[in-house]
Length: 464
Ligand SMILES: Nc1nc2c(ncn2[C@@H]2O[C@H](COP(=O)(O)OP(=O)(O)OP(=O)(O)O)[C@@H](O)[C@H]2O)c(=O)[nH]1
Ligand SMILES: [Mg+2]
Image 1 (cartoon, rainbow, N blue to C red):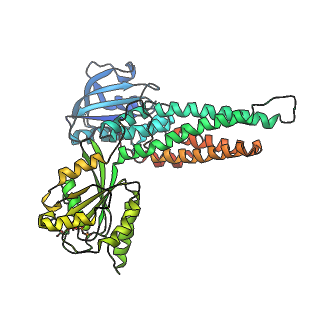
Image 2 (image 1 turned 90 degrees about the vertical axis):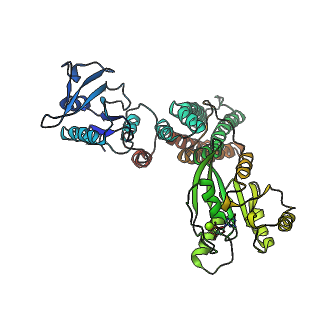
Image 3 (image 1 turned 180 degrees about the vertical axis):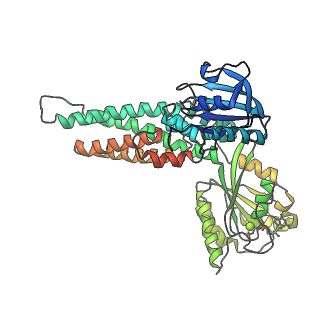
């Protein structure tokens, strides 16, 4: 990919009244000018930046394709940092296709996904964490995800990291000073207690940021809710009822679901990710066994566990209890007695008694008839204690950032240990440099630029 190219792409979603085509690169204004005839005759090249020009775009044989407005941006005061134009056309996909074709005939190439934002990063218009926030902002679907992305895009996270890096540089320079001049007995160095205090301050900030990922991840991807239980209990029926669509196959055959099926929905503004799993039972079937292993994996990863019990079945529940309950420690467990449409009062009492000693909310439900769903949703909301996110909160939502922070945290822990053990400054300096380099990865400093960049930007939509 070279920035010498001038690129073009539609920046708006299809179906609107307007469609905007973006052109960016060294020849953006020249190429746009070749296909555009301004009504007042003044060519784009002679116009000032941030102005709008009204005119027509014609096909190669002179036929008018559309009447358009062209906005003009000159480097470096544009989104990409390059000369750019934005052509506002009528939103017909035919028109947009024709205009793109004209641009390509005149020397543009089609932009790759995320290439505009990638150029903005490469031209120093934003750092990497801000560039990633652009994608998050476009994808944001709730007030919380919008606030987190907006804060990150406006550089909130980057600023905190710059302060952190300054502190680390300060500590590194104190360490290296000690190394370089340790022969000079007359010189006094910062004592190790002071260095430890600086390291502890740094550790607190990195740990706080890394910890915030558990909230950030849940807000962005939904609170993981695993629906588990014996086969035929009605788990897939419940998933479908919650999602309001026939997502999972439902049948009276035991062992219908063999793989994980998941989807997200908002309940009162909170995003939940429901995970339907393979029913738990003894089986010789190899594929089903793999599915059941995955059920336990999802159970372990979930924040909330819905244990669904077929109220009409006479399974040995004690065995299941021994298997499931210890794994639910630290999670919110909700017990669901399903098929309540078939249960008489005695059976209900019997089920209730069997679970009397289990400290969890219990609900009678008929997933098939959508009975009890409102109460279940209320319980789910009660089981969730997400903090209110303000635009100033720094919450890490990106797994790449989280991983870099975790590595930085390990390095700073080694620094702290080294100081506590009075290790030589050489070792400590090495860990400090590693910590710095991990933090640099987040905003895009010293790292294998090409590989990481391509990986990040390929997840963007074309036109951004
Ligand atoms: N009467 C009644 N039947 C139900 C209810 N919920 C589910 N069923 C039926 O129970 C059977 C099993 O439902 P599924 O949703 O496939 O059960 P599952 O727990 O996903 O089963 P596996 O995928 O095999 O683990 C189907 O025939 C459903 O129609 C209910 O509330 N009442
Ligand atoms: Mg199922």
